[in-house]
Length: 420
Ligand SMILES: C[S@@+](CC[C@H](N)C(=O)[O-])C[C@H]1O[C@@H](n2cnc3c(N)ncnc32)[C@H](O)[C@@H]1O
Image 1 (cartoon, rainbow, N blue to C red):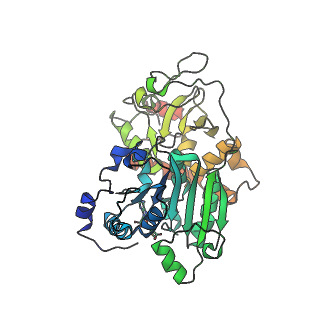
Image 2: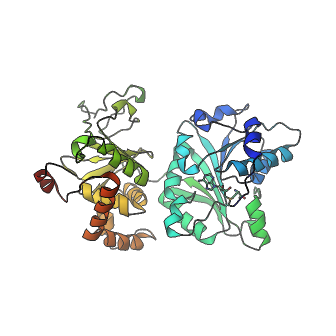
């Protein structure tokens, strides 16, 4: 949504008692920003705040946090809320400006939300932009961090394609639907609060699509029984149940920069930026690793979604274990793994699918049968990219961004006394 610059917005927000200036300071403590302790709701992309104001006023029994990326629009939201609340204090709403793609910088698993509203988020129709959608699986996985186990996501939109594709996103991330309509205003749903975009689209005669999604408690887990849980406050070494310390292998030993030491972090940064993975270097402290029941494996990467990637046994294969102890084999070799994460836009979905049904990614890729609606398309994409010329592209891209020399195998690298 385009909005003209509003010079008054920031100064007004700075003075506003229900605006939060430094949201990162409240990570893990959002329940405490309200005078009354009551169920916590979150609105993502609140825009001009018409919904925020009406929902907050209609439901004083809930606390509502509303986020938008633009301060200018949040200034309008602030004025709308003040207008609708009139003389009443705005006790149950808090606003702040932040990029929701980086929501895990401001919210964590100590923030337990009962409900998340996503109203008319940008549809991002172009293929290359779809990952910016607020319902994209990467985002849904983020929300799972702070959504209560029986919490709900309420999602509505005017956009058919966004809605239909979001149905798959939700299912792939382990949600089921407790309510679903493709024409909200002619449905039996009675607790709807109209947003500014909803008014505009329904006046144009466009039906509003709406769903309520909940996490499916039967979404199967594959649990490692042989891994002992370690007190997260006292993680010095991660241990397996037979008492052996978990060996943590620095990536510095596995991936070596060509010449300078600090090149390791250049590759790390490239992977972090492009794939959201935190790369292990010699500088990492074990105490910085969030607690996780990692089975015995050599750790290569972890990401902010609680997935750990590492070698299972000597020199692979590469496996992934997620925060629920679901495990799958991701690739046979490190090169295959890099190829997957760099070239496959939906590798995370593939990962969660594999963890979900207990199969390994190479098996899932090799399957003829369509497992999920996008499987066929996925296979086509993978067949295209799982081949030598894409590997070449990957090499070029990595070498450009990190200054690494990339070898096809360890032997060739050893000859040159380098390895990647
Ligand atoms: C189409 S408007 C919808 C506004 C309102 N929810 C409604 O239904 O009328 C989408 C809003 O989401 C915000 N938005 C888009 N991407 C965002 C992001 N990554 N982080 C925070 N807000 C975002 C935009 O600034 C915009 O205000």
